[in-house]
Figure 1 (cartoon, helix red, strand yellow):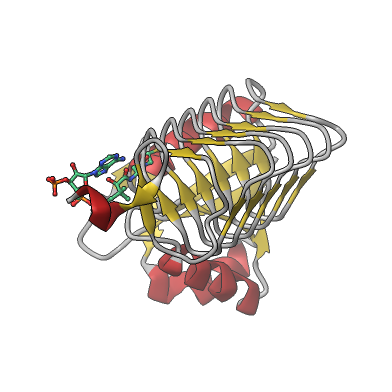
Figure 2 (cartoon, protein in one colour):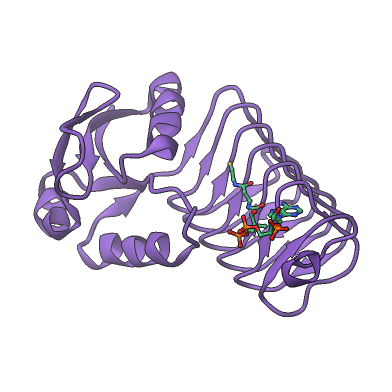
Length: 212
Ligand SMILES: CC(C)(COP(=O)(O)OP(=O)(O)OC[C@H]1O[C@@H](n2cnc3c(N)ncnc32)[C@H](O)[C@@H]1OP(=O)(O)O)[C@@H](O)C(=O)NCCC(=O)NCCS
C-alpha cells in the first residue's frame, strides 16, 4: 500500500476516503487543505496547504484531487496541472462496490465511487469524478476534469466535453454531445446536443435563464 496525498478536505474528500479505505490499494498519508481549516479530516492529518504541494509531493508522490466541483472545474484542473508539474503521480481509484467494465478505459486521477457503473467501450478522461450510483453506458466518452454527479445517467454513445458537470439524477439521451464546460442541472433531461457551454436545466433541458 503506497502513501497517498488527498488534495481538498471537504465533503467530497470524506466520500473519497470511504472509497479509498474500502479499496485498500493506498494508505492515506494526509490531506492538503486551505490554512485555517480543520486539523484532521475523517481522522487523517492536514499536512499543509496548496502552497506546500511541491514539498509534500517530494515525500508522497501519489496524489488524488479530492476537492469537489461546486465552483466549477477550474480549481480542480489547476491542481491537476500543479501535481504533474511537481512530478507527482495521480492515483486512479475504483470502488470495489462499483463496476468498471474491463472493456472501458479510465484516466489518471479519476475516481469511480460506490455503486457507479461504467460499461463496455466507455472512456473516462483524467481527473474526473464518476460519483455514487452514476451510470456511464457503453461507448460513451467523458472528458477530463468532469463530474458525473450522484445517480446521473449518461446513456450509450454520448460525448461529454472536458470540464463539464452533469448534475445529480440528470439523464443524457443516447448519442448526445455536451460541449466542454457545460453545467447540466440536477434532474435535467438532455434531449438534444448542447453545442455551447452554459447552464442547462429541466426536461427537456433548456438554458437556465429561460427558467427564471
Ligand atoms: C443548475 C445549477 C447548476 C444552477 O446553479 P445556479 O446557477 O447557482 O442557480 P441557482 O441555484 O441560483 O438557481 C437559479 C434558478 O434556477 C432554478 N434551478 C436551479 N437548479 C435547477 C434545476 N436543476 N432544475 C430546474 N430549475 C433549477 C432555481 O430554482 C432558481 O429559480 P428562481 O430564480 O425562480 O428561484 C444547479 O442548481 C444544479 O442543479 N447543480 C447541480 C447540483 C449537483 O447535482 N451537484 C452534484 C452533487 S453530487
